[in-house]
Image 1 (cartoon, protein in one colour):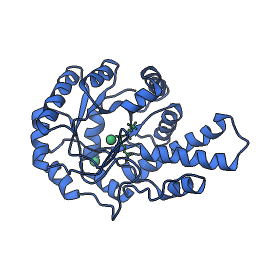
Image 2: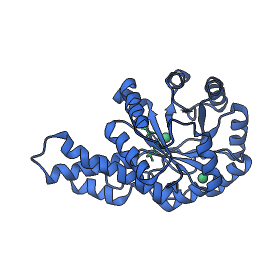
Image 3: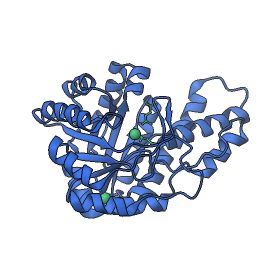
Length: 306
Ligand code: G3H
Ligand code: 13P
Ligand code: ZN
Ligand code: NA
């Protein structure tokens, strides 16, 4: 059934694990995620970005997720990823989402507070969860690349959550969006995470940009005509450690993209006569399922927690 993240996160917080928030863009992705959740008996968050909504169309993306919900007994949260403004947040709240992210991380601090508060007020009146963000991730977002990573300040995080009344907080501790996350040694600022958690006890923390970019898929892409040299993600053991702490939601998009694309490239190269999309989308969907299962087992620790 469609659920609020409230109980899901409370259990994750207490149990030292995290829930995967998987970005959905088309039918095969939705189906692959749902199959993985079923195989692992894991709670799921399906999240839709503004870009996904634009790509699939509002009605299609909603109906795909409705179909997923009809076919499952698992607890599923429908979440808006990186809500860019109040209007889009309002739109999906009115449309039945149980959770929204308002992302004002690019705004001046007081303005971020102002806008987040406005979303919180509207959402809470309707029982909807609000994730907000403080700090700035390096990497690619909405096709815009930012080089500067601004780590979240723990004291400011406390002030921000207190003043906005948001339910969960996305923080910057070294992760970044996209497939090129680290040039040098990958590391996360766990001291910073612990400080935030100490000042905000019980508040679920969210990690964006948390794909691991498994090297076998990078190699598969590059072997079969792709060009993603040097793609690198957050090591799985670092994420597992974050999940054991206050981090209750881990966002994964890039790894799904990579698994699908590598699999399709390989299929195309090995089966040049195929032209029925079902021939390559079937293994691509299986690749999504296997990637999500891998996340649940190696990173999230939420297998059997549905
Ligand atoms: O934060 C970025 C997510 O991976 C969503 O990406 O805006 O290209 O759909 P998108
Ligand atoms: P990745 O690019 O690491 O998969 O991050 C996805 C994300 O944060 C979606 O909001
Ligand atoms: Zn994100
Ligand atoms: Na956790």
